[in-house]
Image (cartoon, rainbow, N blue to C red; front, top):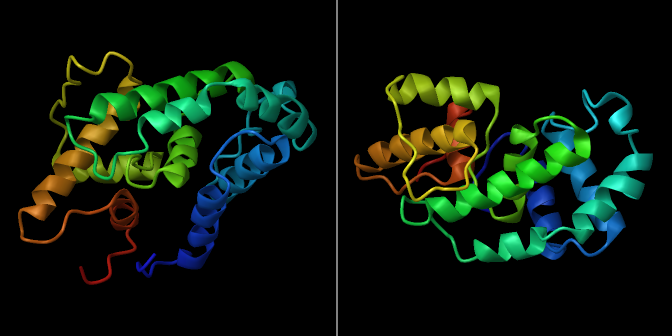
Length: 200
């Protein structure tokens, strides 16, 4: 990656981890990815889970095998061709996010919208915008509080994440009208969190 951001090298380690071991066929690899991405992004799945998840033990012995047995790799393959999110392919992106969110909710007994977006982002950086409360508040200020209706084609979607993504697309496309190349999801996240951008 050419971008130079705070924690750029650390993020590149996570990207490389998912590039080199993208599939979910090994429990040790799965639990390692869950652990490292969750902890690095303050979205550990054991947080707030109470007795539902015992850190370490259940992550490897319970959660990872369930993910291994799930269709996650098939879901990721469905959006592997996406290099740029737009309203034509949005329904596919939102469907994968929704399916994985529901899987994580079943396994951890809590909503994992933020973790899900981050985990999927590292497996397909161009398809998934990174959702959390700070980014949500920032993009809302940038594009205003007007409604962003979810397209009828998006029959599988988490409404909160879908609205966030639509705001991100609006901000990205408005910014691109200045003649700059469109922001990637990583660049947009860094900008929303106040870290600025390198020259484009």
